[in-house]
Amino acid sequence: MSLPDTAAPPAIPAATLIVLRDRADGPPAILMVERAQAMAFAGGALVFPGGRIDPGDHALAVTMGDSDLAPRLAAIRETIEEAGVAIGVSGDVAAMRGKLADGATLGAIGPVDASALVPYARWQPDRAHARVFDTWFYLARWPDGAADPVVDATENVRVFWTTAQDAIDAADRGEASLVFPTRRVLERLATHSDSAAAFAAAAAWPVRKITPWTETREGCDWLCIPDDMGYPVTAEPVARVVRG
Image (cartoon, rainbow, N blue to C red; front, top):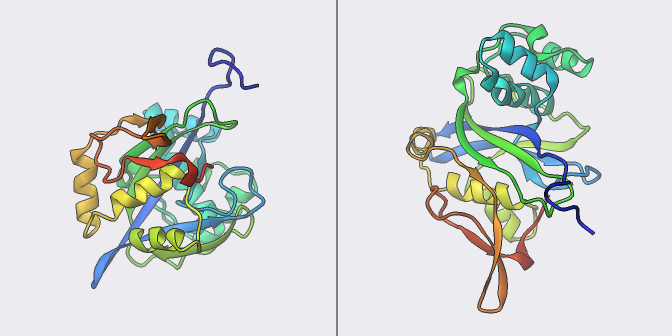
């Protein structure tokens, strides 16, 4: 029996980073990781680097004078940990990653500039899920001269560049798994011709938290989202939905 809303635990604050790299011959490449099958959340799925906002992220945000920076700082930290990519932090990425793995906070590895991260989306499933994340999605450009991404080989088994449409197509062929929010975000990203278009869309559509709901259409249950938030696909049959 599921807990009533009044007794359900609060959603877990989280953040994820969509790193964009422009290409000369098509839409931007996007950095993604493949989750290990054994992970409790989104096992085996393709996702953007990210994870929980931890106390160190909150403490650093307060030190920086803006507690609202905590999700951005978490996205920066998690992208270093999961993909070996540093956005807004300068220095030896391998050394940063090692320090974070040993328990250091993001603030301990050097000055951090979170201004490169732009809010793109925010998703929180309903309380019917056993584990509910309230997740911020941010955009950032691939830093010039950055080293190649390196998988962490713990939570994730692969880190790679792909286009939004290629990731969707791989899922449609049964070669990849995408949870519902990731697929909807990829469909939106696939409408952008380059990173500038993605950032323009982020500015044009103010972020509102999306909590999908189920409705019956012609005898079939569909999982739905609002149709006024910039997403080209706003419903999918529940039978086809992959949940994290």
